[in-house]
Amino acid sequence: MKKTVYKTEAKSGLLPGVKRAVAAIAAAAIIAGASARQPSRGYRGFLDWSNDIRTENTGLNGEKETLYYTGFSTSHGYQFNPWLYVGAGLGLEKCTRYDFWLAPVFVHARTDQQLGRFTPFAEVRLGYNLTDDGGVYFSPNIGYRFNWGRKTGVNVGVGLTLQGVKTNIYEVTSQPGDYWIMDYKGVRHDCRVCFSFRVGIDF
Image 1 (tube, rainbow, N blue to C red):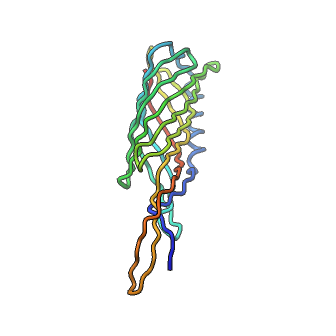
Image 2 (tube, rainbow, N blue to C red):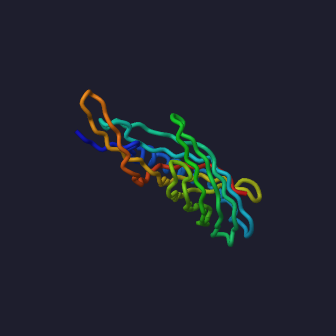
Image 3 (cartoon, rainbow, N blue to C red):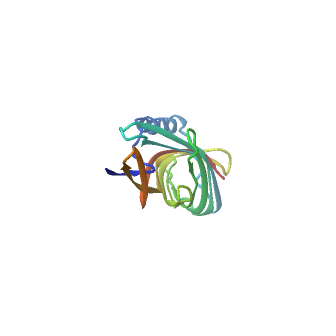
């Protein structure tokens, strides 16, 4: 008897708390009511507390568990005008339950908007994940920037993170005497989808 098994089998989905997180950020922006100053032209840096959450199949019977990654990321680049920033950065996050890591290097593009007293932003990070044998890293986010001092802002954002990974494929064959032979069949490219949440500062 032969069957194909995988070293890891991931199935991702968004948690029910996504809508609550977005609603909480919107409420905080309305309550605060104070806009941040628009970024000025020149060097700009970011330091973020980064979090990613995904749900994964953990067994042949469809059992699922939620994996939580937490860590930091930083980005440095140039603010071309009050609305456009382009830079590059890196991050490092660790799973709180297992010895899994997320270590991206990325290009970072961001736009800050001024809508009356409100200062939302949208950003995208595109690069390469250095863990799990490497793969694409893509993380779009939206959020709100609060004023904190003359040149510093506090950023709160939510979005998605796509983490590219390579999965080893094996074929397991049962043999007489109740033992199994495992044959390596190659590599499959997967993409894990996480809900992301970041809090940080820009300077």
